[in-house]
Image (tube, rainbow, N blue to C red; front, top):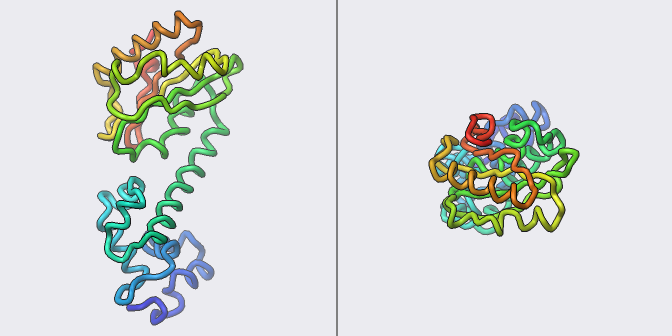
Length: 226
């Protein structure tokens, strides 16, 4: 049924104003972003089809790129960008609060800062968070994308921004696309190598946080770092 043929209290816009945004289902919220459906499909039904195509529903939607969304029937460039943009905005809102609460001593605050950004990534992203002497985050350097290994994550690239910006310490963060944050043998070996390199440069490695799907592991907290 077309949205305009539905009773007013069942239309997403009218329902949002009368009952609040929290009363809308996931498909109704997506319909608000899409604004329109197709000639034969309402925006709500199109939203339901998008969720069905996303592996894990909203979780899968978080990993869709605009190009991937455009492969779905009824989704053109404008709808794909609007939906992907809304997802990205949600990630930034979530991480913005975590950045305000950041403390270098807390692995949990670091994990919260990067969880929404990294938990849905299909590749491994390695980041280096620069920290000053007061424990305040200075800058986040995107070091590499791909499988984490000693060959890919070279100390030269990892510490270049830390040296340039006179950081006193760093925290490494990377994700596991599998969703399981358990450190691999490569993770451990690479971290050991980077810790030794940091000692030579006079830059402390405070922790290495591995992000999974809603879970994280602190390598220091797990006793895997000196």
